[in-house]
Length: 118
Image (spheres, rainbow, N blue to C red):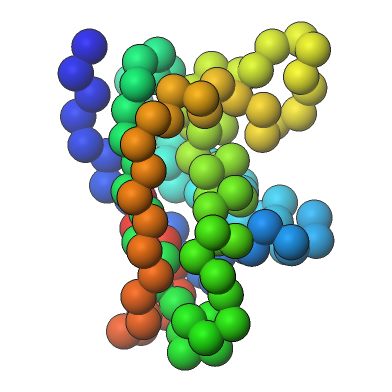
């Protein structure tokens, strides 16, 4: 199956990997809902690639390592794109994101408000 490109912008400051649940959960849901609005197809069930561009304010650019931005954002998009993980793995963020076989991520200075482009 050939999957068309999905282009989504999620406004807001991305949650970092070490963020407390009060910060991480709303970000994950914001990503999941934004992706779900644009994705009206069945779950992805084949290898795929994901490209993320984190647009950050100057503070975020200086103090946030790129790898710390990945987890919460991938959890959110996985919730909308991949089948749930199964009965032994409860929770909304346990999805078959192992289908992601290629990942590109970068951080750039935001022109306006912080966001992530997926």
